[in-house]
Amino acid sequence: MKKNIIYIVMACTLTGFSACSGDYEDASQKHVYTESESPYLRTDAEATVPLTAEFRKGHVTAVTVNLDDYAELIRSKLGMSIDEMVAGVGTGKVVFYNINVNRGVWDKTAPTKGTTGWYYDKSGIVTSADGQAGSVELHADSKTLELLVPAQSAAGVTFAVNVGFAVNSGQNYDRYIRFNIQFLVSDPSLATPIFTIPSGDYASFEIPFADYQEAIETCMGMTLKEFNAAVQSTDGDIALYMVDESGRWLTDKAYTANGLGYWCDGNGTPRGWGDGCVYYVETHDGTVGVGRYPGIASGTQKTVHFVYASKSDPTKYFEFVCTATFE
Image 1 (spheres, one colour):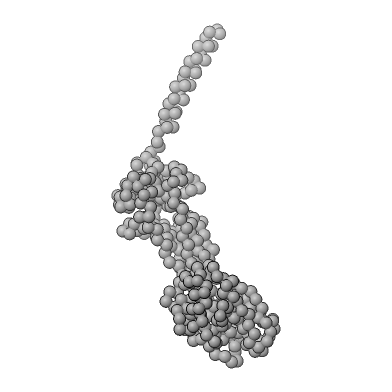
Image 2 (image 1 turned 60 degrees about the vertical axis):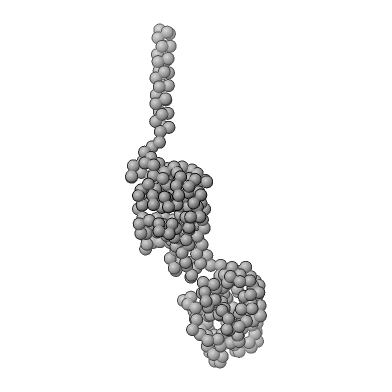
């Protein structure tokens, strides 16, 4: 009886080894994905290109990614040239899809922008044009990716999307290049000082330009010294505009105070000196002063909104939204 039990155990053991061997072969073979399945994303840090697409509130322009800049990486990872990769998208030899990083798979959602692009919501999820916070589109003719957000996007909008090109081997998308794109709508041009205007007729609070040197140099494309020199003349390229409650620059108003400066009513609308004035904004050497008209009651508080901008290139500007309390 004991001998029979030993034979039975040996037979079961051999059967078990045979079954394990078959499972191993099955597991080691590549899975062939159908059109309805989402292929897994093989991890390859070297194939990932991190990008930041920063847009400026109020003056949005498209960010263009030139695929030629990644020619060496594309050849290394896909084994083809830029032209071959882009042409392959049209023939099906190469796929251009989104990547769901949370699930670790390729996302085969059909384009929602043209034939080679998508709109995304604020969570980076593919959506329609109506619900978009941004978009990515491949332009095959110029071999570029165009990244864009709506013109009226608010500062602070940020989300990430991942798109990639992969060789369509018929089994997987293991040979690929991926763009990890961080969208950001910023407003480096905005200063929001809070201050008190001293008592006394025509007294002013002076805002030093040097307090905003980095922002001014970034936004205006010139040094602080060059900016200060430029705003001392009304005939140069830099203008001062008041901004109304809707955010519109009042570019059609003549200066009514000294130099680049205006007398304004309580709503910030430029006007000539006299009854109805509440404050003035006036450019001085190294500062911009916000001062009071005679007789303004102590404790009065106003939002003083103005902008310095290039006449030749309005995308170069620096904006002040001040909270001023009259002492």
